[in-house]
Length: 352
Ligand code: ZN
Image (cartoon, rainbow, N blue to C red; front, top):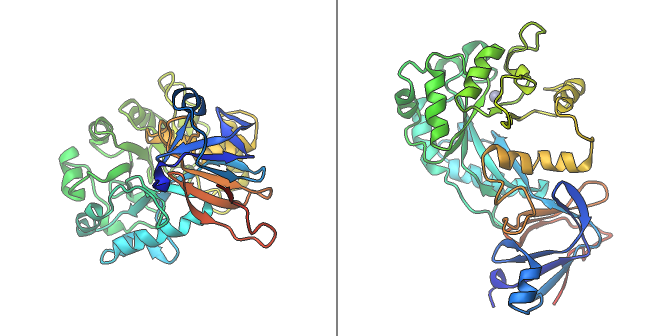
């Protein structure tokens, strides 16, 4: 029997499910998390393979919606070797517990988009690397005054609206997220067109005031790129895009997600706490894990399959040790990374 078709039972583990950490086994078949009760009653079979998790925590794999590069690779400067660069990063992030991601391209000359965007296709992850969820194009429709590290000469206006978007990017088939500045002329209809096509519009590299941010949200924007960075600083009379976190003009039930560079340098820990406390919940392990798995999945509309350990979801998960270290990473039920430790050489004991 192909291993993919085997019924796997992850035993002796705590799992994160329904916002709680509970003691429960995880059952996997054909790359999906399955409901064991249904198998017992309908098929009357038991597991083909048991995997002992040694009492550690099993949580959904991390999802990173903005990776501009890493491991010596910069996606925006690897036009000739973009596929190789993406493969290198996709492989490297497995040891960090990332099971899927959006390679991110910053503001670039038009020929870069034409060459690079068709080459980064959505792809199922494996031992060779994390799943690719589509591209995050950060720019070039941004505000020159908040360009950050983006090259000024490549910044574009939206003077011809959606037509201009297609002219600059070429094919947007592989694009999942677009970061743009909502104060640009024609931004609102462009945001509406992009979101109607299922693309998540994120606001960033922007001088927008709060009202402009609210108009963008009204037209479908649902995300803020690296909150606090490359946008107007919080001001009490007009808090800018940061104010979207607590605006009462956001439609009921709509969540504005944000990415944040929580390295203690780009964002001061106190600013990080301000962002966190606008959505007051307990400060907990569960929240931290969901911020790196469930929430990004929700932000791009894939939480039915990713970011959870619910029945039917993709079997993408990580095993976390006592010191919050990643012990192993799993994609579609296959172990794609395992940390070697001297004290636990058999951390993934397979019981046939
Ligand atoms: Zn940026």
